[in-house]
Length: 391
Ligand SMILES: Cc1cc2nc3c(=O)[nH]c(=O)nc-3n(C[C@H](O)[C@H](O)[C@H](O)COP(=O)(O)OP(=O)(O)OC[C@H]3O[C@@H](n4cnc5c(N)ncnc54)[C@H](O)[C@@H]3O)c2cc1C
Image 1 (cartoon, helix red, strand yellow):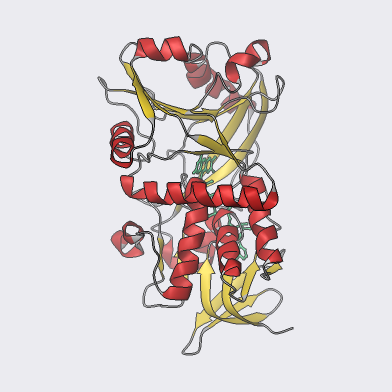
Image 2: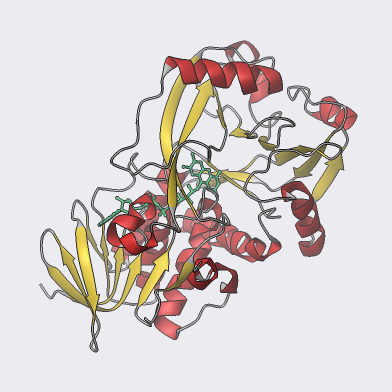
């Protein structure tokens, strides 16, 4: 079998599997390589669900990526008769009278409202009284405000990766799992990719290795830091209907006075599956996929319940039914890097996207396929250049 390809994609998580699917759709001879067998639970793309929304508070330049991703996720659902994106509505809560901890960026709430207005995204602005009437499960303070987005939805990350790889394979992509890329070299003719099992050549190389990025590119260690995140599923069996769709939306809540807010999703797996809640962590020491503590201690679970869950959702029980450790790979400005490697027109770097990338992954995959086939993407990726982080 020939070891020569048009494009090689290294890392087949959210970003790489989306890219491989888009390349295969374009008839590109593509090889995808992953050191494990995605979907798996050691990177950034597991934990049953991801939030997607359309008015993007991280910056309105993300909204076209999100809107296009909705279309591609829907197209994959039609092609495979699977459920990948379920609309529940989404509630963002923030205090406008007191500074609050930010999600990834200052003015997240205000940016969200502005993006909704700019792109005509259906939403309501709610005061505390209106939140309590519509969503009594949320224990808001009088000075907190809500933004409710009607089409906010949850995604099934593991299923999306499975579907993207299945479609890519059916369209002719070659997929090598349990094979590790250990290096690569660009020369006048193309790129050579070295793995623990062989050498491959290609016109283009896409690096979408998530939190393993600085293992392949150690020179980027000052730019990309990996932080341990914990997801919890707390018991709500006593009040299941209050925590299940259609009564309970997904949420992002910037908590006053706390070092970090909370986000979460409704109970999706029956009365005994719990509801999911997390709190983004950027404060502990950075980790690596090898060094990170993968188990969740009883102490941190109790701390999460006492400091956040009971305060926000008094109906929830303290019993934690399940937890998971996942990894954010974060840039100093919490934005993405989707760019050619410096001085290269052959190697594209796609970062793991600072804890908010899954919702955009389908359109990022399409954009990278366009970059490597046409030299540029239809959607504007100029905000995601590596050079902005040069310092
Ligand atoms: C707790 C948590 C909650 C999140 N919530 C949301 C959310 O609600 N909404 C949202 O939009 N985003 C969210 N995100 C962010 C989103 O999940 C990530 O941006 C996205 O999953 C990153 O995907 P990735 O493909 O870059 O990384 P990964 O999925 O980790 O994929 C990287 C792949 O590269 C492979 N690999 C690594 N090194 C090599 C090598 N040398 N050779 C071959 N293969 C290699 C790995 O095995 C892995 O499969 C969340 C992230 C976390 C951790």
